[in-house]
Image 1 (spheres, rainbow, N blue to C red):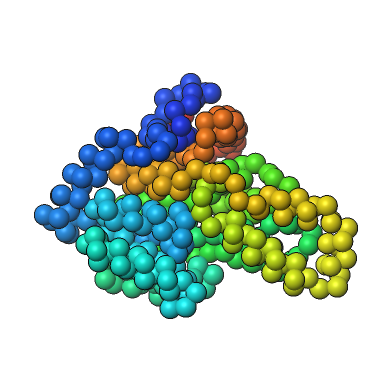
Image 2: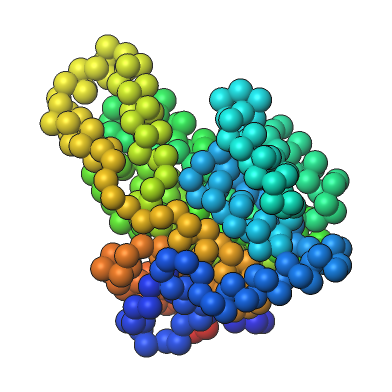
Length: 350
């Protein structure tokens, strides 16, 4: 079976395990080689549209999804940019993408998918497959963060898992059969540094991201025999709408507490203050950095993509890379001792 490279990072930090890493991606704008590759790719697709890879992205109303949709479309991909509430809440974002698509003559279609709804996912994916014939790359990006002490609300916990865990699984279940049939494909899962580390007052978000990490690493092993790959991105804070949305979700959470949970909130008064403080806007990297990582992963040949990529400043990436490498070693030991060592070839080069 074809091996895959070990964990990598957006920054050029040393690998603590001294294994050779593939697919390093520099911070900031795309490297010259990537730009040249994108230009060549776009030219080739223009002459032969049947070779144009098809990409489906969730959560394109803002942030990573919006920027990545434009980045890939400008690089010669046929992009299906999905979001919920296309005709209402996200109508302005949808119309902005459509205007840019027309002005720049991009291959980009805005479609509606609400990953919380089975029928919305199934119908949206069916529409893409019916029109394009295949889906080559999926960027599972949509997600939410409802902050606060984990004890406060069962409803908030259910909503977090519905979107961040079950929503991601819905997309996988809807698209994986066609990829398995085609014997090729790539799932890019948007995780977080908080899929490996825990931050108080973000515990439920951490729990969903830990679940994503486990679910999609398992998928990396299980889908590999069918020629389908998985790549996980672990970003830190970037200049997106996540904090503004989180402030809104947190207000909804606090306003909707029943009498029992209001009593809990009083006991956690200091934690609530801390939560509010963490949601204040602060300087953060440009989301274009993550879009460039997605582009790089999509353009990297099969079998050479890292399972995990940390998208954060070097001082943060170094610690996360060490943690990823340590857990990778423990994972390898577990599979070896369980008689499942052959699975290791599916995602790493042990």
